[in-house]
Amino acid sequence: MYPRRDNVYEHKDSLNFDMMKTRIFMDRKGTHQDMYLWLAHLVLGMIMPTITFLMATVEDTISEVRAEFIQAIIDKNNSALDAYLAYTFYGMFFVLIATLLTIYVGPGANGSGVAEIMGLLNGINYP
Image (tube, rainbow, N blue to C red):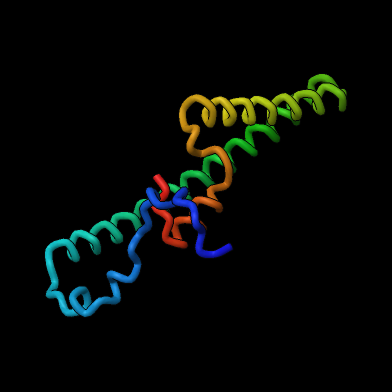
C-alpha cells in the first residue's frame, strides 16, 4: 500500500536533484567553485585514461608471461598434464590475490556496484 503507514524510511536522507533546476541556482553568477569543478573534471579526464592504459599494459604483460611460462614447461617436460596444471595454478594464484585484496584491503569492492549506482541515481544517499 502506498504511501507507507509506517515510518521505517523516515530517518533516511535523499539527495536533492531539483535544486539544480531552481531559478536561484540558474541565475547565480560564476564562482570559484565552478573553476575548481572544471579543474577536477580536467584532472579526472587525464588520470582515468592513464590508469586504463596501465591496467591494459599490466594485463597484457601477465598474459605474455603466462604463455612463455607454459611454453617453457611444454618444451622442458613435453607433458600436457604438467602444462595444464601450471596453467590452472597460475590462474588460481591471481584469483587468490584478488580475493585476499577484496576481503582484507578493500571490502567495498565486493560486488558489481550496480545496485549502489542505481540507488544513487534514484536519489538515495548511500554512504
